[in-house]
Image (tube, rainbow, N blue to C red; front, side, top):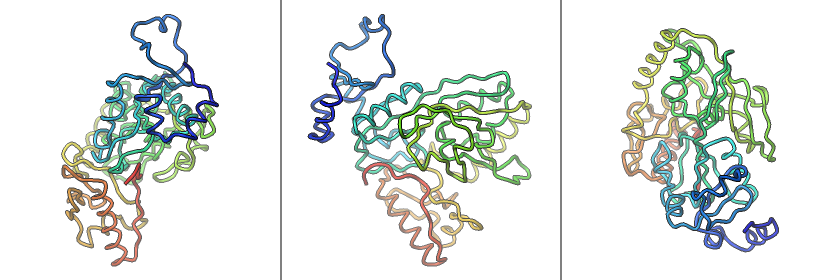
Length: 361
């Protein structure tokens, strides 16, 4: 059974999302592109399914549990906080990702593309719609230093592969939890190598191009100018373009020098940031204030180590809030409000939140 657009439209206009899940059920799954003839005959393909475009619905209760019960912010974010999504899907390739986003748009379902889950806070009530976890990570190195890589690739796994091939440019960002997609979304940055640490280095400096699924549904390759990179921002913040794959231009490098930079950067970060394995966090909570750090202001009003429930302002870095084990999104939101109020009251400075708030709180 294939649902046509008219039927789908009628369903969407007359049924809530939960009703739609019960009607078409039990869990939303997706596939990119058409199957080959021999694949259609495979016994691995469930027979009790029906599809619309790139959307395939499974009736198996096991798929329901995998798609809904386990898809929590607590499981898939670095903060380890948040409720479940109505629908959850792992996109393992650019085609998967493009198909999932296109399907959500066609179905009129709210969606969110999740990378490594850093820099976000998921609400305690979860996300009403489809969370697409981007795990696409295919890549290819070229002899001229170009690196093509899908946007779900994790930087921590990508960097050693570049260093092993003596290609330089990515090693500066070691230790920062991010996917490639997150790196270009936020224009990932870190200080230049020790001992000078004289400037901030940005991922934009090695960015050559990106393949996007644009907000109006086109597949398009764009250059650096299109991306409008800034401090902690890019054009991806301004419109619903999705980075499918990125091409970096790397330079020949000395492995020994790159390993030294990585060790120094990891040591520097380890002394200034809480370890995620022990104290989960979303990274910096507030945006940078020119001339004075947000963390310094929070420290000066005496809030370092202050806690609300199981959410705490880190003893190491006051612009980072950590989960002591059972923190809720409400705990974090309350702590943010306290920090903002104290700083504004004493310094007349407004702390602007940097992390994204996802879902219902």
